[in-house]
Image (cartoon, rainbow, N blue to C red; front, top):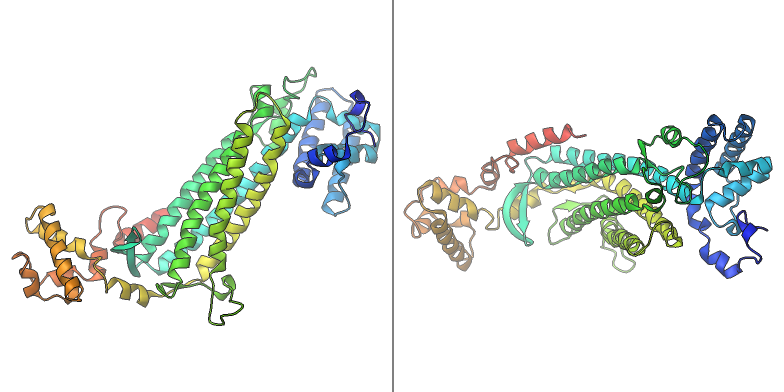
Length: 456
């Protein structure tokens, strides 16, 4: 079968070359976007008087017929026609005859593929934003239930200070809020139309690029035709944002794995998000958060892969750019699946409040509050810090915690101590004392939740 572009050639493409260079096995994902762009393009060709209106109607009907057949699973794409663009054009010519060849007037595969990917990422980015909102809602719901639930806060994975569990969860809400904002901002650049840039230099036909941009919902056209066909920044930006989203999800997944272990027993994940062992019947493995954590590397790899492809390319289009799609499709699929799993996993997890409270009752995470207590009595913080360090060492040597010490033991280290120290050291009071804006006191957490709801 002759190629649609084969007039210049005297030999057929080598079969191995044909298979190696064809992209139809993955860029068929862009079929609907390709038809969408073609419908806008052919309407513009007719409105500008470049092709007869009767041809426009025939081509439009042909494209809609092909779209219907693809959706019905009645179309088999062929590697012989290389990519989705040539496959659809061949299908169109088979459907309506040689008039189908007029569709490609005033455009190139270079601006065509770029347009398809802009349309694809626009749709997928909007979907991902909505999925992030679903996770934020699940975090908010679980946080409202646990404002007064207290657990250890950590630095260096060592117990630091007790915090509200809602406060801990809400940290991930704000990470996702920034992720959402970055994606929303990226739509400004995704919403540029390359259509009409041609192969690299524009076209001799009197096309109206603004019209096709408006039809397709783009906010502006690329001002430079060479940039239009060679720009893949919008994909790199998407992959970068996706990588950061996966970083945040991986961090949360790590905590879910740790918290659900027998060593912590802070939460229990629903059975529907766990699996068992083939040999150990007692096991309940947190496979879903483990796999979410692992898939982060996959998304990172897609980002680095595209950056490497682009780093040495001269303007404008090069066949190297065919490598921009598989990583993009894979990242979209990975991110979509990840986000859809996370919301229900958070919603259904059981929070073991008593175990969390028991943990903060058997550690030294209230030590800073003794230092603050002495500062209110007039001691410089550094001097108070040294005194508390000695008190902690004394408690450790005597197999006690700070609430177990007597007032006499405290006054051995400083005469400023009185009975009120024991009220200061209660975990609930330690949490309640963090009244600074953005702190973990119950009132501050409730205000934070109210603020978060205004972002949804």
